[in-house]
Length: 113
Length: 111
Image (tube, rainbow over all chains, first blue to last red):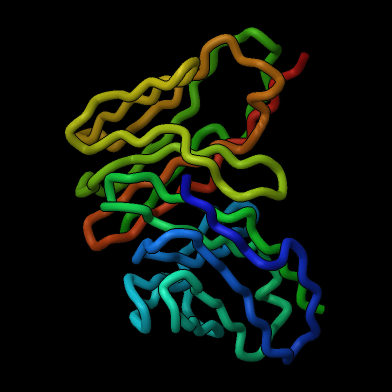
């Protein structure tokens, strides 16, 4: 079974801090995604990666960057955290083709004060 | 731009009732439609995936249908139980390699 691990369940950071959110998979899947989830807005795609060092912007990439140096790890970086980035962040993996279901981690609840 | 809408936003039913959750999407150029469940403070769990060439999928007490031409899907839950209480999200995998989500339906099943 696909296992997706997000390193932190809860994080509290201050405005202006650089924040790293980590996502690790236990297999060799190529496609990894970062979403944020806000009440009433559903999940919105921030960035995705289809291989090592490859990345594509999603719908809301502003204020974020990503890093994928190894296949199993996909990091989301908030360059200078702001209060409007307070949200639930979800990492997901696509194990096979697009006709396989997405597998999600348990999420990181980030609060920026 | 693809938009996915879920109705109702929230639903409260007594235990044992059969219920239907609705999902609509604006662009029929999709590979598949997926239904997920999310428990409070947790990630999403896949329930059912319907490929664009299929009309429905079933898993236990869950049945999901897809009418691609009209841009609609329904998730039918039979004999609801308190353990079914969660948020249910639908999403469409559109051409262009992106999964677009609805905002979800919050379901509460009362014992």
